[in-house]
Image 1: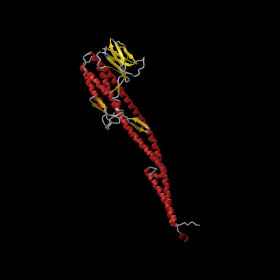
Image 2: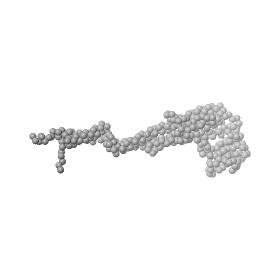
Image 3: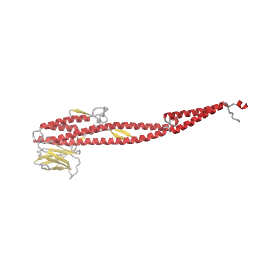
Image 4: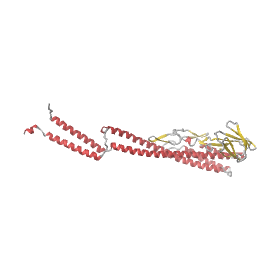
Length: 400
């Protein structure tokens, strides 16, 4: 059997070779024009699929960056707002100390109360601060409406207790602004653990000079009431009203029972009572309102003046706790801002790594591409020359 070499076959092979060279040249021209090694997915399906996944990773990093910017803005504004609120509380403490001076007149105290009313309004405005985009800082997740409003009984909180967690880097979350209920509303009274107060119906001049845990015993968190029965004698009642102790007392001495102690100055009258037990909670606005009400009162009796002094001292303790709570909130916000900075460094490192991998997959090696382009151009020219010469070949030329 013999293979037949036809003119059509030779023309077809030459044409096919030139078309392949032209296609390769077109691909190289597109690569050189775009600077991309992967012009279409068919150039390298595996590399193209990997590149798409890396593009998604870059988009995710960009989204994390936007999240971080938003939260950082809100936390930065929270820091500024809480600094202003802290300044208010410092001034309130100064005014409370000033008002506790027995040499002040009722008019002096009412002037102080007027300044406290201005601070009260400023504190409410601060608590309703926004982040510049119409969202309220201290409303929790319900941040589309003002979280605080005046009511007949004081100030009400309308937000929730949700503190959003936002992803700012792969598997790295930071907390958004603290809900206002945790800053302005749920403030521990007294020393934060224990509190003491005088009964409003007291008729003597007894004033709480101090209280706390007794070093000689363990306190189980129970509440006690000290009731003076006369001639320096007192009974200790537990939370149910049952008498659990008693003794005699002299001004300035500590009364101790069940791991707690309380010191009382002045002279309590028979029937006067003082409570000591676990600290409760009170909102900042109620503390300010109580202080204002105390300063606007004008007691004429010694018992009334003692009650005012007890109220002033209780207000100063509560103001101190509120200031500490705001400082704690600022510290927590600062920790979140530090975490955002750390997450930014992680995102930057990841971005550099992903961009480098994408460059290896997509970016064109110009030196190699130009060399291949020249080789393909030479090969195409050679194929065209061979085809041209082949057109002139004929058996008739051999017979001449």
